[in-house]
Image 1 (cartoon, rainbow, N blue to C red):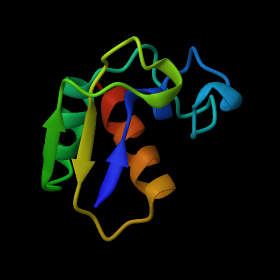
Image 2: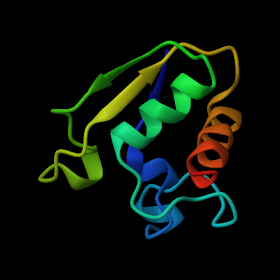
Image 3: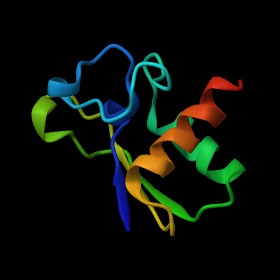
Image 4: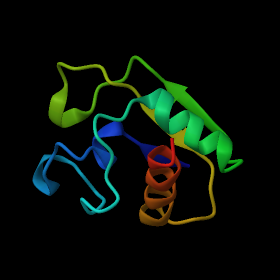
Length: 87
């Protein structure tokens, strides 16, 4: 199970603020719905938890997505970014 927070792929955050992909792949203000749509396109089973808050931003409930994938986390994050950027 891979936990994906929108902060991991947010272009507006620095690496120290929680972004895990390079700016080249990152997305401007992603939501859990964007991530969910991208995972559907990738045919990856997932579950959206909208009431969760990223620990670094505990006061802001952005939600998170739990995904079942054979890819490692960084590969999966890059694939999600590619799908979201194709809009």
